[in-house]
Image 1: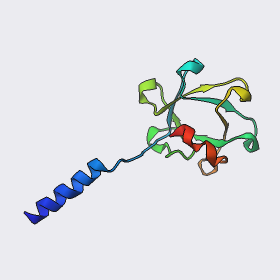
Image 2: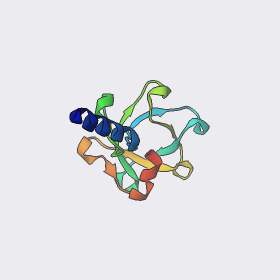
Image 3: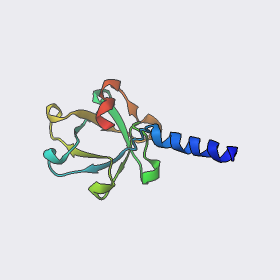
Length: 115
């Protein structure tokens, strides 16, 4: 009986405590008004707020660490993004990198955009 009570208390604690999980599954939309975040792709890493590595599978997507999985459908994504033509139009400037270990935030103050 005592074990049952302990299990119930632990299970209810998981329901009460808010869990903030933010996998980086993104969907690229066609119009800026549909997007959560407007993004500009820089040519060089030193110009970017975020260095992004594009993963092949959704389970490889990171927790707001720059490892993005591009979804085929909008409902699968955590964030919708729009690729801008000019940096002044964007909320976030990114640069794509070739290796997963290079993915990171260069400007930590912009991290809130992807939560």
